Length: 211
Image 1 (cartoon, rainbow, N blue to C red):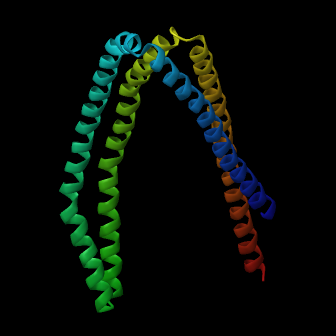
Image 2: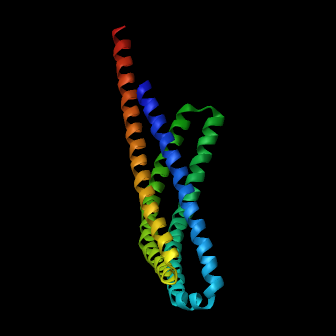
Image 3: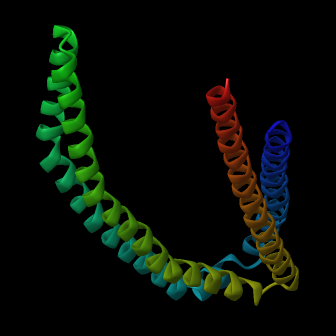
């Protein structure tokens, strides 16, 4: 079990290191991109603004569509929370009263009711949370495409900017792969530790039974 704990600690630390190193690397490249953009705007700002104006309108439209889609789901989430709020508050009040009265039977019953109602609430909320994530990703694709289109248009005015943007995208993809692998390693180490703990408890129960 100690070995499993150590493995989990090591892969967790590696993941944190990779996240930090990734942020630092991307920040350095973005700083170069911003510097190049400043130079470009100083030299040919009007032409740049004119070239990307239609693309910026597409970006604003994509952002608006994403915001509207998310707002609709947020409203559904809020409606469910408001619907269940009186029930959950009543359950918690019953728990407090039973605990204050020292009535174990009533407390157990109140806790069971609270957990049942909370699970029912989550059963309604979780699909909506999944819907929110799906909507964010779906509408976010148009936002990403619009931003990339703006970058590509600007890159037509500067080979240096084109080079930096390609470098940024390649690095971002590499970091994403590294972080996904790191996350998977952490999850695997957690499962290994959980299995080791379960085995340890089982062994302890057997030894206790024999004793």
